[in-house]
Image (cartoon, rainbow, N blue to C red; front, side):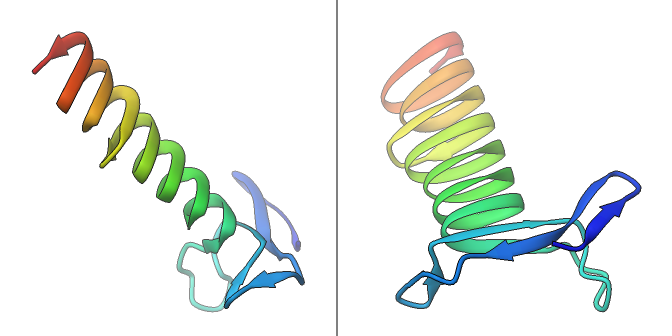
Length: 115
């Protein structure tokens, strides 16, 4: 981890333990100082502004289980905007089972405005 920048913490941590080619835990936030692109967390457990993993937590999260502002999950998606093939819970939710203010579910939907 490197240090603080104007809007929060800037750095990353990768656990030395890997499963296949993915680190067990990868935490990434801020921007890469060389390329000036946002850091992306890739891991079994991925945490960061942009997270991709089996369990992903972040502003934009993609994985089997995804939790974030905008989340795309195969089994479960939880967030402001949640889209997934299984259970989706969020302000705007799309999935097989969708729960939220605006919800569209293929099997079932629950919420304020449903389809």
